[in-house]
Length: 132
Image 1 (cartoon, rainbow, N blue to C red):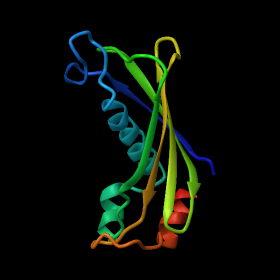
Image 2 (tube, rainbow, N blue to C red; image 1 turned 60 degrees about the vertical axis):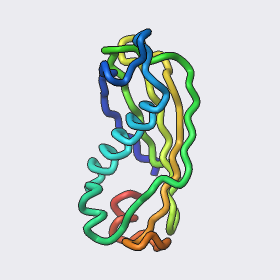
Image 3 (tube, rainbow, N blue to C red; image 1 turned 45 degrees about the vertical axis):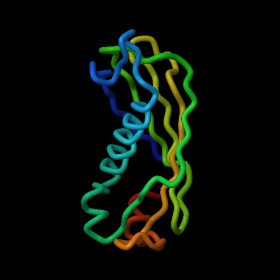
Image 4 (cartoon, rainbow, N blue to C red; image 1 turned 120 degrees about the horizontal axis):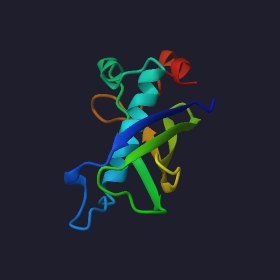
């Protein structure tokens, strides 16, 4: 560890306001895209994890906004697995404008492993090995 993945997203029309600026809620959607792709690169598609009875809901999320993202811009989402414990995983994100590398936002999400009933559970060793 740490493992980093990068994915590119385009700011779409429904994500912006009348001034062409992305609404702040979309940053968390882009973070999720980055996290999902990082996990997929590690061999962990969310559907396969959930088929094993493990769910990873967000229990904490934070975002610091540094510059606006505008309609039709390409953004790089850099995602890093920051910490991995027995029950929790923390991911860090860096969102950059692709054209000039300008920092748009930074953020984190914390996820807890739960079972189908929503009770905390340990991450299976097989999943930890792929993430670690």
